[in-house]
Image (cartoon, rainbow, N blue to C red; front, side):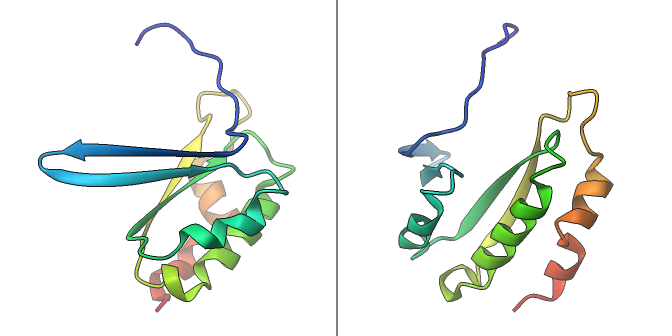
Length: 114
């Protein structure tokens, strides 16, 4: 685990089933490219949790990330899903602080979502 592994964004869909303490998770990794986003909604049914990964170092696209997150959270199928926002690349020198990302993504308003 101590070696660096170059990361690249997913270019398609990856599905993994993970079992932990007799609980089975099916994880869908759906890439964030423009051409893939319209397909996201096909995976919303029966979703209980959502991990939204945002690039902390990409100030130019944080607004786009905020808009996509808001669109997803308006979907009926995701109304009861638990949300975890993962601020990736926090180790980069120019990465946005968690408080800045919280503000730019509008996460304060999510507490009242129903």
